[in-house]
Image (cartoon, one colour):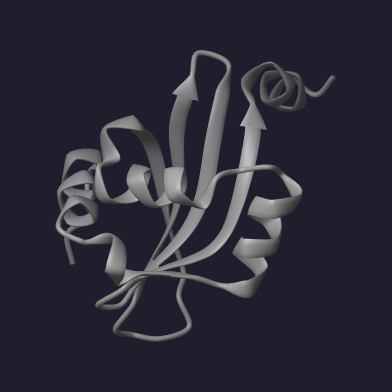
Length: 109
């Protein structure tokens, strides 16, 4: 099976409507705790111009795809969503990432 590239995933996400998005209880709680607006999250998914990186992840079911997606909100701030696609878009979790903090972690400081 051919791996999806960034533009392919953007096209796939762009084919969904907001009504196709399901927010898990965990993702809803994480959005609340991290003060992330769910409407903004949904907009980022259906209009994925801010999607800058993703990694495919293993899934439990054969008919679904799971992606760890990074959306550049600003020069120093990202949203990271774990998305499961199975006819709908299921948001498994929402994480906000400060790039300065992320770089320090990656450098081992």
